[in-house]
Length: 151
Image (cartoon, rainbow, N blue to C red; front, side):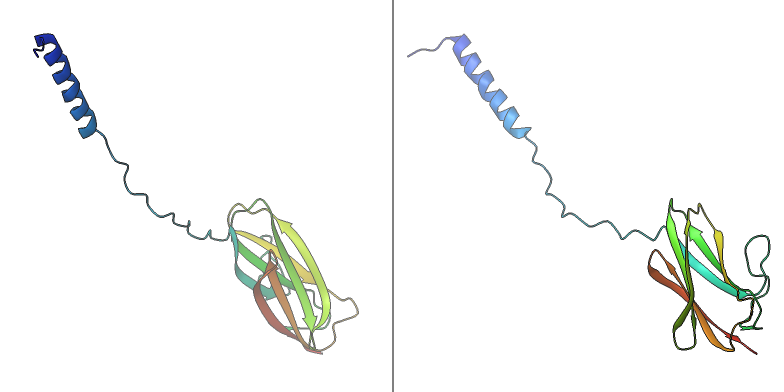
């Protein structure tokens, strides 16, 4: 059996194309195991609590103290850093045995360093004893300051 030159050429060409296609086939690289993204840092953090009986125009306590007179207004400046469209700060003030004196919440939307103030006042005077203010950020404890009222 004789094959024409054209048939041999066509078969050879097909063979070469098949080999080229097989050699050019690229295998996909082995898949990498999925890694969890690193935990996100809190958008806002409390960096300091300042306790005193006077505030400056920037809402910061002008002089930090831990002993107060019965008729003082008692301030806590909550210094935060970070940005959030909405964060919730809570200050819970308690007397000696854990009796709640006051609890208040403020919603903030900081875009960098910020200061928020909370205060308590009692015109007829605070009873002498030890007190504490606990600050939380979005329901998580953020800091505590203890202080004393002296009669």
